[in-house]
Amino acid sequence: MAETIRKIALGELELDRPFVIAGPCSAESREQVLTTADALAAGGIRVFRSGVWKPRTKPGGFEGAGSEAFAWLQEARERTGMKLCTEVATAAHVEEALKAGMDLLWIGARTTANPFAVQELSDALRGTEIPVLVKNPINPDIDLWCGAIERLSGAGLRNIGIIHRGFSSYERNLYRNLPLWHIPIEMKRRYPEITLLCDPSHMGGSREWVAPLAQQALDLMYDGLMIESHCHPECALSDARQQLTPSELFAVIHRLVVRDDARVPDGIGLLREQIDELDSELVALLAKRQRLSNEIGDWKIAHNMPVLQSGRYREIIERLSALASKQGLDPAYVTAIMETIHRESIRQQMKQQEEVESAKA
Image (cartoon, rainbow, N blue to C red):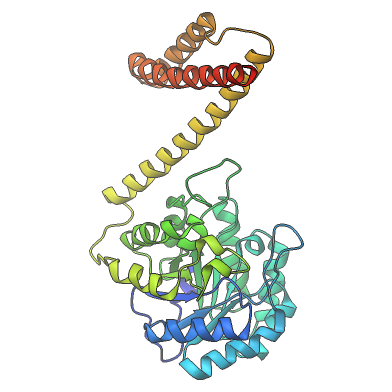
């Protein structure tokens, strides 16, 4: 089935690497859509993205302007000549998007995670030639991602691409969604001709991470980027923190370095990316450990216990030294790390006690 999938094509539009799809998280108003589209087109963006329907974690938030927004998008295309891209999650969405003349569709992470929904979309798209981009599922399940590709391909679609937007984690992390770069790279191995895009906006969750994540994706030979851009991000009704102004987007694009001779599967870059991911996870685990340590500090205060528990510390060092040996690590190396962690825990617990005493005084 992999051999039937080809690179995304958008008519006469040249999609040289890296090509960029940009636009607001959601279409909020005619003025917002047209202002953003005009600015992006003036800077050379040729594919405009915007959500018409927005799946939200909880009810009550802005869920998109709905079908009314298609008229705004069509007007933007007439003014700028840009291709239009929007998200679909149901067969009804597909019907409306095709009727409105959308040039490109994408399937969101939540939808990709639901085989019933993907099959519904595949059936609705059967017999069409419209390009479809599939975001990775919210959890790091590569077979679920492959399953979505296979369902679309089984419905006769060939113009299929994938969008790497990172994977959700219960723990607090540096990024909104963990990159886990090895998963999309494995997808590229399984589907060599598939178009691979990165969505650094959703991956980072903050505009400060868009540039470094976009560069990492290009270093791993991604074909392009999907980046959220809003004329006034501070006023955005959804995902305000991660959207760039058009001028900020152009600054990011102009700084990107395209290395055509980068080696992806076996290069040092991939190993470094994995190291970076593990380092981020280590920081998140340290933060979680410190929060638990602070809770213990509160408990000690409530029960009038001393901060330093020497016996407990010895038990920790003995247990982890033994575990380090089993893992092929030098126990002295692990002990040195734990000494630093323990000092910080004691420091913060002492600070907690000082604050309580100060409040009493």
